[in-house]
Image (cartoon, rainbow, N blue to C red; front, side):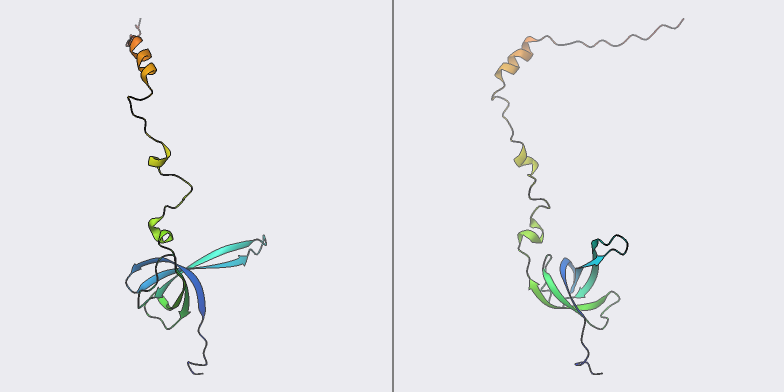
Length: 139
């Protein structure tokens, strides 16, 4: 059988890491039916993929093709980038956009504003003295 007649296995996945030189980590999602409960469960597989031109970024959807082993962990190469991730989704955006940052959530109030009546009440009250409890006498 010639190399042209042999078809290569291809998969589609999402890039989850691009920190290595000429290597990306791609997460493959597949749905399988649970043998006992018959519920569809999502299974994930992470593969190291050879990216010689370093064109893929985190969040991109890529098509990968199985090739001869390139290293101990790499037997896949990138075929092409299907969709590119936006800059916000690539890591500069917060994990949960619904939550506000602490600085935005609670505005600060200047000490001189709106606390005049409370300050007068606190200054009129006498300071409370705390007395130390006397030790019990033993007979």
